[in-house]
Length: 97
Image 1: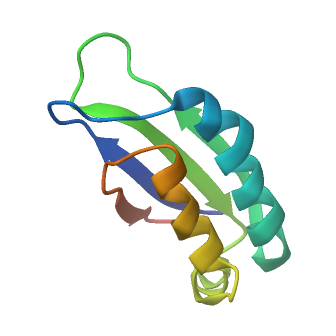
Image 2: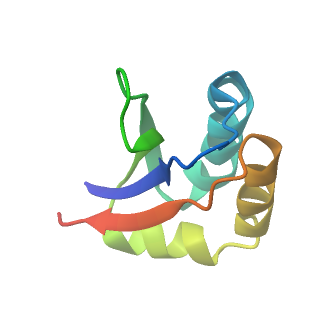
């Protein structure tokens, strides 16, 4: 299993709509990336005052599946949806297998 981690670092006045993120964005990711090996997501919201508004662990069947999802023609739709729930530039990185 491989993991793509997406975090949203907070800043003064940052906007992050957690309800939209969980009800709309994550299902969009699931629908568009499952054909490429996406297997699930774990959304994490910090308790109290933390440097992140949210993080998500996106699970894939392999590192090649992450590559396939990111290279898919559907990825611009996933990335374009970010503006609907936040003005924070996400930080994206991979975890080692």
